[in-house]
Length: 468
Image (cartoon, rainbow, N blue to C red; front, side, top):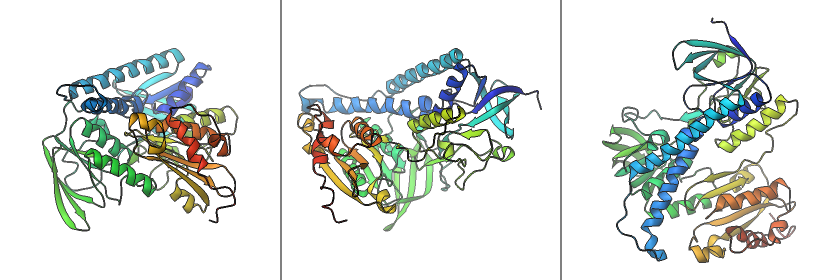
């Protein structure tokens, strides 16, 4: 073994939570090393959150331009310059990369580009991208290695060179017919974006509906909106074989209750879930335990089975959102400083960046019923929000769950314009443990989408009047 370089803290992976921890510790005078195999700053600024939202914004502009005449603006022929879409995204990624390199330099955290593997609990052997190896040790170690797209074991799928979200965001052409396997967050965002770039899009979902984790009324309304826009959704259908090469032409053999059929397209995108990047990094040598799906076992303080070794983000089973990883950073940072922060009871919101967007925080109806929590429900169609009279964005609805034993808001979902911003107001009320009447009775600015919170919460049945 090479003579090891010793640090106060070694962080494997430079994702959102890990890099923030590295910069903070280094700025406080700690000796910190971050081992990153590929993307400085992790996947979010390079191949995931920011790049996808960059291209989704391009799709929004394309859609608005094609429909400009409805709003009184005349345009000529409209087409998508996918090479420019790609270039704009790459310009943003380059800015993000420069920002991250500058942050490492100014913080004093050492960035080591290479593939790290544990050879014992707090020692990593790094195969450097520039050649050779390096051994690093730390008094404390943080694992922040993330996840990658799952590729099912379907005959012909790997040979078809199917796209994941990474390759889809590198396309410099508009697919003639994009077939998407999966109906979750990535699949649905990409489906709408490429449809608006002028691709024909078919979504093949094995379950009974897209967005299977959402309540049925939410998933059904989103499916209705997407179908009305022209996206084909094929539920209860499982892919059993693939022929061809994505980009040259593919044929997907699928099976449903009505039998087998074939779906032909030009390109194939696979978005059926994520797999933790925990294989092949020596966790067995470190003594770090995994659960059955392969995520790192952590307690509610994000400590692993090995003292002094922590895990942050998706590899630790944290919800697969960048802001959840940031919250993990806050917990680990506090606990390293002697505090006692926990993941228990935290509110992790999320937003699906379709148009209209879908935002949620707290419990869904499905989750409340599963946990035996009784609730009152309030619903408001977006057509009842006065802002939509001006914008004509009437699709969707707001829905709130109110405890049946007190007046606390326990869940909120909105499928409608600016849903993420409105949801943040409700989340703030939930964190402050305000009764729903605080939002019902507030003077909320007119004409905003958040103004709909008033009539939404005004529809809640009084406490004690509900017999469920």
